Length: 146
Image: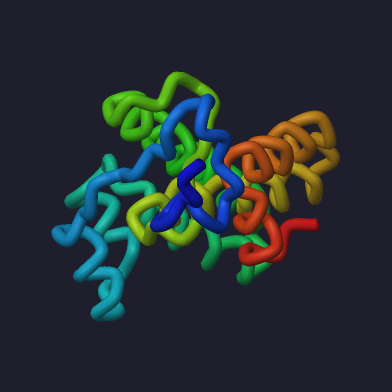
């Protein structure tokens, strides 16, 4: 038996299950975000970027703007689902946190979980926490989702 290495090693990937989904890098958006550019400007120029929407959601949540955070996070979540499906994800299977291009989607799910819980949409909050755990058990703790 071969011991897995690389992105799936820390994830406990089932060798008989689906392979981890690794989204491609999006330097057009992430380089601008990393440079401190307004995430609203980045999202406007790159509306498919989960990282831009996740950044907007995190900033809104930090500012106490729960409804805006929820809306931004939901957009990032849906944009991420589109990207995952285009890259072979069938609605289940590993989406490793350690693979940096996956983090925009996972961050959006985390903010959606937090914002949903805050507004009392507990079923949605639970679904989002479960999705994070299903994608990668390391994601929720890394993102501060209990």
